[in-house]
Image 1 (cartoon, rainbow, N blue to C red):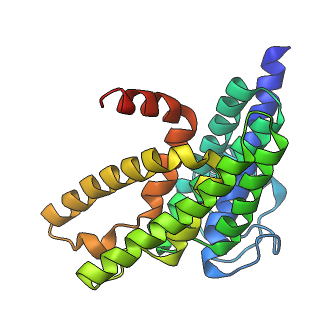
Image 2: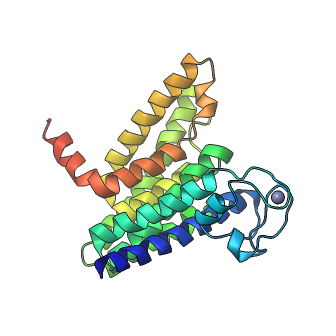
Length: 254
Ligand SMILES: [Zn+2]
């Protein structure tokens, strides 16, 4: 019986992963995410339902479009699998609950932001702004969350990052932080609460710097190449599950 539930959860995650692919592909280009139906990005042929089944169609089509033979990016089945794994993970921790609903939506948004910012260097307002409200909504509906911490988290998260970016610009005379990062941090603060702001920024700065150093050693220009949002979003996902341990460990050092 419990296996049947897990299979249903996995199928749900697969289809949400499939939707995530649509969001990641279309949102940065300004296309509608509801219409038209899925199509091959190369030959624009609309896909019949049996060529649009998460993961299975990719295997069945051997990773190529049946119309034009163009390679289908491995990113599609991977994101679908990540959707399924995320759904299973959230279900295992939160069961079917209000918390599970909001945590799952938050993680989906973080995955989309990570990939979109990585590739296009933008964080769409269509994700960050409604998710600030969703984060506050979660704190109002879940007895385990605190509305004041969520509101303060959004305010100080956005405000704090804005200030860091402003100071950076004063000192270095270059834009270090985009407006997209500020709104993303407000969204993260709304979901995780004010206590998690510091660990999220610490982890993101650390991993982002390591990647920046790696790029510079390869001869690139790290300042213009590191998309900070694609480090903030995974850091938020880590802190969602391990933030409390991190805080306990970190503050036990002082
Ligand atoms: Zn095609």
